[in-house]
Length: 91
Image (cartoon, rainbow, N blue to C red; front, side, top):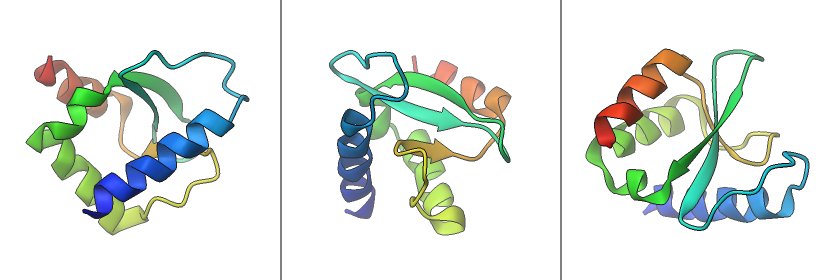
């Protein structure tokens, strides 16, 4: 599956990148959320990746923007409010 390969690359890049200054706990993933140049870092449980709503979001992002982002982590170009609303429904 393309999403799993992308996430492996993203996780690998995230581990190599020390610029964030904050550790990502085991079982979690750092993602960058925001539109344009204003991005905020969120640390989410890896379990979110199995949720159909989150997978739909990732598919839309991949189709529209691809996953080659210079920040080294997974970048989701949507509003923070939309992301928080989606992830709060996954808890």
